[in-house]
Image 1 (tube, rainbow, N blue to C red):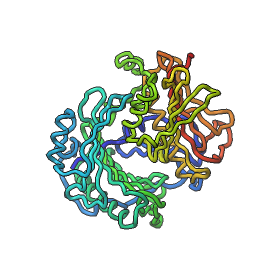
Image 2: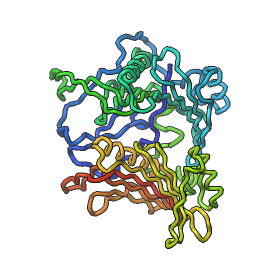
Image 3: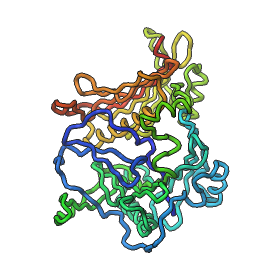
Image 4: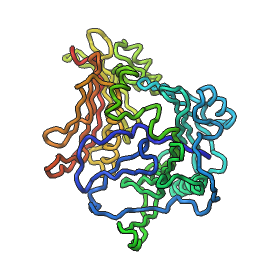
Length: 451
């Protein structure tokens, strides 16, 4: 069995500095370029903490194969297939589905996702139905990545967590016995927020695979940094209350994923010229210049929102009218989001969109770090787009409590701004600032900054 897509938007460097006791620890995990997830050591852990490993979810038996492992897709759906070919393969693989296949087109990248939900996968004893997501490249229009996710509805029970761990063992056993390139795999890598990389690898052709477990109890062995040092006592860590998820991913090309192509500074100008400069046109299907009726239709299509879920807010002094939608979940944020669509009162047309993720007043350290990671993911995605030369910027505010993760202006004067507050920050040469209050991540899209 082949497995699934790394987080392709996690390609961005962090744009603010963290304190020494909260330094980044990158999960190389074999999917180095496309799935590196930057994480930060919580303040309670020492800066010279030992490397930790976990045997949770590792297979106890598997067949040893002498052949190289090749990641080719999932089931009958192989990388390089067209949307029509994948639809036919999915119909053969899953004649009975919990929800039928659904297409979503990303208005910014042009990438297409085909998703469906099935009751179970053969030989995988998971306690929940499974969501499958097939991603087609913006450039090629061909299958370039697949996700498979088992997620509990609401807080998970001990039985559900144990079931996800067992499912991780079964899936891992299909990979562990094969031959991989030297230093191209990693197992049992525990991130500071409790996320466990059960297995990850990059095959001989550059395709990547990852098995990731979130919200599960883990047994951890902490080892000294020297290879000859004995292991410390094993520690059992119980996951915090909340949903749990087993996520399996494959991507056709680790170093150049088609939906969000990575660009180094030397080739950025040439790539922008070839692909065309980026245009800030709105948010998803909601395009600048839409009137209120068309805007409402776009919101309902994007989020399956009922008409009564869209609130109206008036500001006669500023000459603005806004439509506001509250969402329980909006990737990549770990908390609910509020999307505000602002119309110019004189023209009645959409000119500005705010997307805001906000925690409660006193989030724990783990949630603050997850908010910081979401901000980093978005910043990387925005950095890769083609902006007007000399208009991009990232900086910390003077009080070190808020950071402008990214801002850019397009060739027509449209703009995008990404800000974060309430997460650990430190300016070089200064003491770290302890975050207070809620953690807030805000992305703002402007039709025109010149008027």
